[in-house]
Image (cartoon, rainbow, N blue to C red; front, side, top):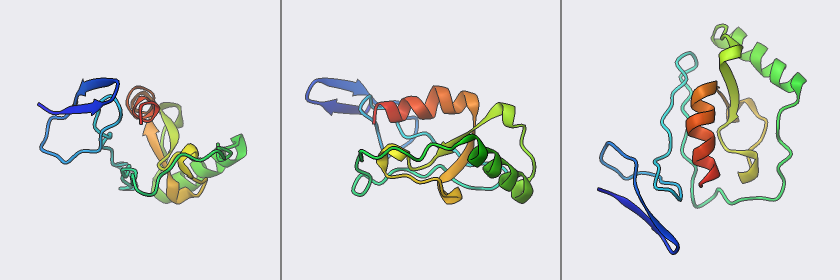
Length: 122
């Protein structure tokens, strides 16, 4: 058993393998994902350099989203984008950018049920 302890609560860690793990405030390990087409990995944040910032203006516009999709499809093969969302590996709120090196397509259900909730509790 592993626990993440905080001044106001203690959560049992959700891990099935030997650590060390990067846990959020609820004791949930950082999600593991590798894009099967590009081989790009959803890398863990660095707690020493990823501080929350006030500027959050890196959300993709519709044009930028379409440009990324076209670029991805041309380089790695077409995805059914109805099943995917574009994720900022380093979120905008932590200094992330719109650079393609910081973007990865994630299955929508995984993005919404696993990755986004993890960051909500980071």
